[in-house]
Image (cartoon, rainbow, N blue to C red):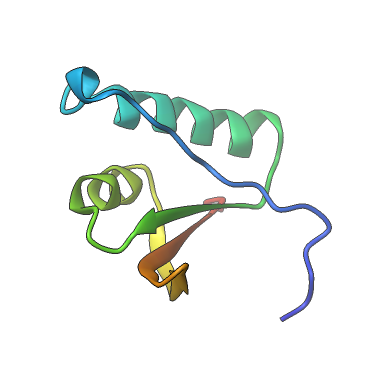
Length: 86
C-alpha cells in the first residue's frame, strides 16, 4: 500500500452520562461534512475496539465502512474508512 501524505482520523470520547444522546453521531456527521466539503480531504479513518457496537453504528451512520481488523496490545480493533462521495 502506498503511504499517504497525510492521515486523517475521526475520534471522540464522552463520559458515560452523555452516551446514547446522539452527540457522537451529530459531531461526527458535522466533521465529515467539513472534512469532505470544506477541506477537500479524500478519505478519513477511524479505529474502534471490535466489540464496541455503538461506536460501530455511529461510524456506519456517517458513511464509514469496515476497512481491516487489527490487534493493538492484544485487544481486537477494527479500522474503518470513509471515502469522499463523488
